[in-house]
Image (cartoon, rainbow, N blue to C red; front, side):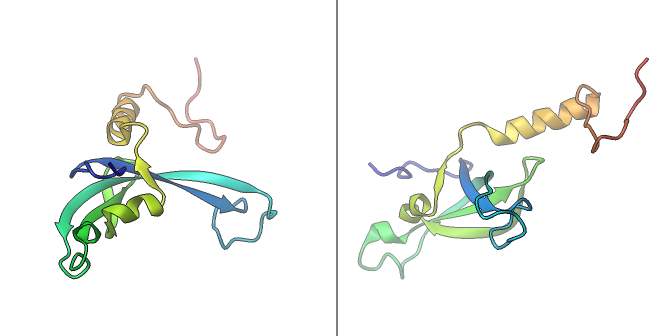
Amino acid sequence: MARFDDISIGAQLMRTYTMRGWRGGIDDTSGPPTDLSQQTWYYIVTDLWFDPVKGDTNPKKGQMVGVRRLNGHGEAFGRKQGHTRRGLASNGFHYADRDYISECKAFLAAKEEGKVVGIGMGLVLRQRP
């Protein structure tokens, strides 16, 4: 059984990118070339469909998955990216290691209630009593 044979709409996926330079862009050469950092982006499966052109000779090649990236609020944004089910693994996707959407929603709720206060780039946000 392949990794994504049981994938369904609403499944959360993750993809880890390795970046060079302190600004994070892969083409950014302002940082030392040995300065590598990793960033994980989370995605949600929005669509499943069969592409008859790709699946003409092999039905497994025609099983398509549409994913969209999740922002810091736990909402899908950007354009939909289409991949084959087999291509998800070769493109570096994995099932998410946590429920990213519920974590984002819980963080935003705690921020609204005042339980979480951002540092604000070192500025004083409120005076302590």
